[in-house]
Amino acid sequence: MSIEAALAIDLGGSELRAALVDRDGKILAFAVVPTQAQAGPDVVIGQIEALAATVHAEAPGLSILGVGVGAPGPLDPLAGIAVGPPTLAGWQDVPLADILERRLGLPVRLENDANAAALGEWRFGAGHGARSLVFVTVSTGIGGGVVADGRILHGRRGLAAEIGHMTITNEGERCVCGVVGCFEAIASGTALGRRADAATSPLDGSTLRRLSANAEVTGRHVVEAARLQDDLAVALLEEEARWLGVGFTNLLHLYSPDVLVVGGGIANGLDLMAPVIGATIQQRAMRAYRDVPVVQAQLGRHAGLVGAASLVLFDDLGTLAAPMPVGPSTYPDTRRDAAGQSRLTSRT
Ligand SMILES: [Zn+2]
Image (cartoon, rainbow, N blue to C red; front, side, top):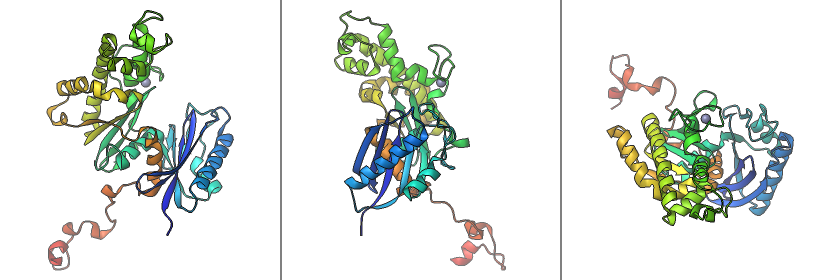
């Protein structure tokens, strides 16, 4: 019998990636091309078809159960429609799942890319075995997804858990969404880089500018310099850690996860930030929420791919949340038979 696998597609604004993934989350074949993001949906869908053929050729003979697609939001995961991702030109209300089902001849499931990454870490990574988790990615922006009681939290129109745009202050730089005070505007890698950039200047001899070759300083440079115990970088990263601690405290109070998983480029500095993040949570969270582990993501850039595959490889409700059987037998203890006895007791 051939090995069962899923075709996973990660449709990003800059990279389009495809993989064949087995039930253990193992990547059996992988291919990547630059997304022709400005060329419109027809061209990009053609790219997806070509990439699918590439990975099939790389790992032939598998039994492909279906296609899981992670794509930028906003999208409707139930209807399989890309509603209008800002990073892809011309994608207004594209029924991507239907189109790909016709072109590839396989069932297709579509999910928000951040939710797909959360699913990946939950199924195969740092959140494996948890019943509830919050996944936060801290890089250019801040995004994430929530697994609550064994299933991804979608909310109205699939728009739940827009973590980067929760308000955590009333000052600072304006967010890309247009308002002041978003978590993303103050604690993303971009925000950290901007603070580091403002605190230094080209050719000032600082560690940060040496690491950036006197170009713009990024969040990654701050993490790198803090590892070299550069005082300025350590102070900048402590400020970053305090803001992350504030945001994480909100997430603990809102979702009460078993574990909070942090991914994205800035998560490479999580070990350096952990003491201040931990202290901030101890200070701000109510007692019952303080012992939740905050851990680094394990799957790196493949989290979204294996998460998209898991949409096909597993029931989306998750093995931990098998739906209750529908019908009269659902609540046997509340129903009574003709003799007036509870069925539950009469059965035993
Ligand atoms: Zn915002």
